[in-house]
Length: 284
Image 1 (cartoon, rainbow, N blue to C red):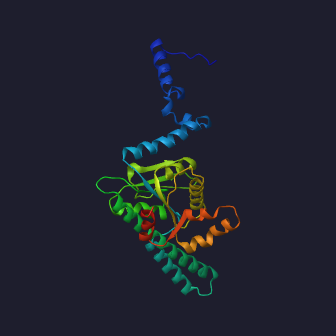
Image 2 (cartoon, rainbow, N blue to C red):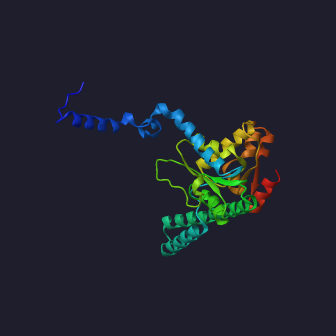
């Protein structure tokens, strides 16, 4: 029970009480109620919405098939890597006996090496977008995780040739924004990794994995598992940078240990340049 208030007139009472009702949280239409949608009990609804919103948008944009480009968000552009290398070299010259300066020089050299992957990813996206998005068709549309690094390179390559590309960004505890080269009507923000990874593969005709960290490895191995277990149709999986992948993942050792079949090694192929990536896709 609440204390009964006094009003100057019945008309004032009616007006005040009705205004309070109109602004009461309970009166907000359910689908517009942000507080309601954030409740744990509404998780099934949120999952359905994250499935349907990108699906409807891609259908409206006539996206028939995609090519997934995975890779590190930390991969620099060649220009950025060059600037970092010059700064590290200058620091090393000024402080030749500094362990910190020498460590910075080594990091800069590795960053410059990885910048080549940015160039290859951008060139591949240019190539596949210009060859497959012809006369309004939307086949083999590049889809990335929507962030910086290799993801940016993929979206940027499509942007370079005036083609569409998709970005599947995700909310993270730290600041995260989509790269600027994604087609605006195909730029999505996800709360759930699971739904995001579903969308990566729903229209995929190939998966290209550039060097990356935990996120890239997670996405790669989930895709390989789904292909291995026939949950999705077999598609080309191309790993770019064989020296990197041989160092990070010993796939033959998995077969030697008997934890995968020898034919599972055939699920992956390797490439070093954009044209080879495309040829591996076109051959399937």
